[in-house]
Length: 278
Image (cartoon, rainbow, N blue to C red; front, side, top):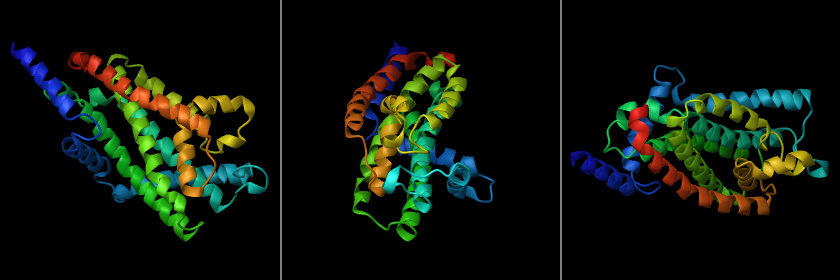
């Protein structure tokens, strides 16, 4: 009887703190603790959130621009130099955010075993906390790109008003991945090893280093079904006014709205076994 009552309280608590509007007051302390622990003892501290992606952009730029002489796009509208670097940065920040959420979600229940074993804790908030952690880094990178583009690039554009749409899309995608992979990762430990490998391959099957419109025909259908493609293209649409595939955006947007409640349902369906598995 007592166990049934505890489960009932857990279910009610989970509903009361359902993402995205509720439970932020509980999720933020978890996110803040993990962010501070991540950089505790380092000299640069939170600056590593900017140094690491900038270092990757520098390496990729040296390889693709310095070795392969890559340009952004084709024909007279092709962009090189600083425009290439900022577009690469915009795509890379989206990919890194998705990759971090997907990779860490596979071990989310195991890494918080002490909370999982407390039945009354709304475990969906662990996914929310993960998104908040990644969101802190993402917003720092967005601010840095805004400074670079505003000072050294094309200046402030009216299209920047579309940035909240791109960020909301990315947030919904990461929430779907966090819920689904956290739930499945508790049961399928192989996902901890498979997902990082898959994300490495996805880096080159996403429009990070090139615009989707200039991809060769055999690769376009892969980009069309790749869930990371649209948020990357939306981000560049907002930052630089680059074109976006409207049909792919509509199709993936509808699919994303369908998958979000399904991911919540999957998580709640599987959460009853988490405590026995971690």
